[in-house]
Length: 152
Image 1 (cartoon, rainbow, N blue to C red):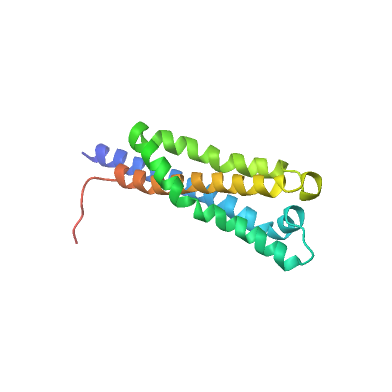
Image 2: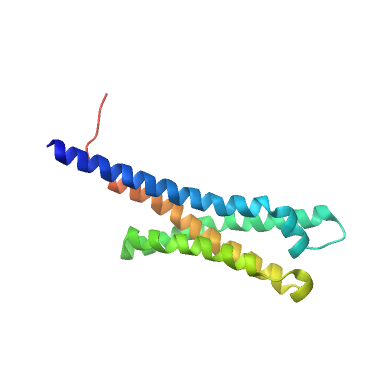
């Protein structure tokens, strides 16, 4: 009995640590983009007014947040069809891959309008992945938690 309780506690702790690492990675990518917005505005959205460039860069940040519900829908379906673990293995890759691709994007001066459009697309993909990761992460924690209900 005690051995069984210890196994459940270990699994719960392991699941919570994995969930925390996923959430930290998720918010790290968003905060990384936010931190570099002054640079992003000059590289991808040059304009005569610095404030206009900043507003455009912040709008791209908002695109990532607006894509999150679509990610929850898409990856909710994937999770129901193929399992939560499949979804939770795909989403971290889809979160970090656009970040890497953003670092390789050429500037607006080199390729013109293609650069900010690709940036918007990459942030949208990242937002979809984060929406799927976050919702599935919470559901996975609830499903893998202890079945015993405590009353006080």
